[in-house]
Length: 591
Image: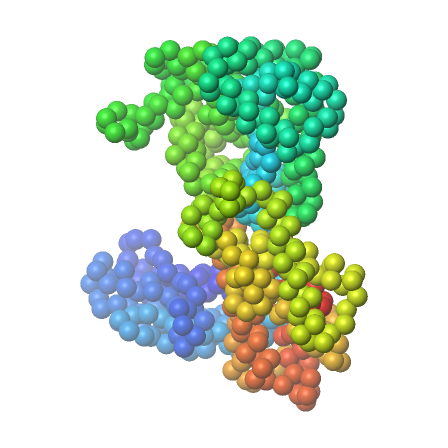
């Protein structure tokens, strides 16, 4: 109902200006959706803040606004008589015929009333970001799933989205890994897939242990990094083989989850790192402290009360994550073709990196690398925890591999499905089971993550996420299946036009109003970057639909009620399917 909301906003503002031309301050109707159904569809609270400057009771101000409002013919076509409540709230209820017309416009509209933005500069979503020579683990789950959902919503709104995977494919870790492999598995540096990724992870751990304890190994590893950065062909070949092997393993998980990403790792920005330091120095921001080049942050102090530094060049002349992230910001906002020319850059990483990104963003702002009309945002998320409330780990204490977690979700779903079919004495072929189990299992994992406010930690529980009741993916998928069953019973759920929609029952109007909220919810997710808002809406919609379907006859109703109720069913399944699709969850016709 965004179009209606904007129209009402304009009508209210004009009424306030006519009623109080002497106000002498910016007027704000403070229009918002009503907090309760009994208050109507919208509530305007703009009378209350005018009481003091106008020297009048807010209820009298509201009465004057309503008098001007009802004199507007356009408003009279939109709403019933406004009601003044409490000290001066103005409650507004849309005319039934306007609600029906709004719903009618969505029939057959693939966008379901969601407007498309005009093509603008790209929006970059930086998410997933695993490290080369390491397996993806449960810690990558949230970044990957949340980032994909946000990218889908932004793309649906019409933005050109660059889905960037900022993989860790450069730096000291490669020097120590290549040095170690030269000694224990030299074939891994010259032949593709000479060792599998699991072995590569073990070699990485061994190399890290040696690096921490052996000064000679440290020095050799740093020399290897210098060779790599200098373009030594042997080092580059070894590096390329390691990256390719990891990349193929990552892609298996992305394919399983239906995730699209463009890899642009840390190595991409290597040629731009020195320029970052040089330009910070030229801008007078760089300070050499204990041999390291750094920028002292404004408004950020340590325990000693002194400003904290963001180090951008180590005392040995090397660079670090902050240097790479500054180079990335600079490139992403730089006009094309020298950069991406982005208007908005979104980083989806764990909350533990909030301080790091706050410092990087501040330095980039002060250096003038973020244009004034552009935005950069960190989208933090909490931990995935076990049932004990602690960080999710295996029984042996290791971090859970993402591949193992996803495979177990599918296996459990398949076992549940086979048991349900047996309990229902229902016969389905193996192809049906092999289609439904992966779809539902992976949907359950995604939805359990996305339905939680990303800022908080959440407890991972297969039992909860696979349940057919409650705010879960199986519950929502089953709602779509239930509506599809109406068609199998003879109801026409095609996209054909309905001459006129006729509603008389309270449950019908409740469903109408819920369906019309979809465009507003998408706008909220686009701005606030909180996918759980969409999840909560879809869950509420499915509940409102179930109450409607349980209490109001559809197939047995007489015309014109039958066609109107079938139209409600069709719009509900379209909305659920589109909403779930924006979360990266495909729907099923049968479960």
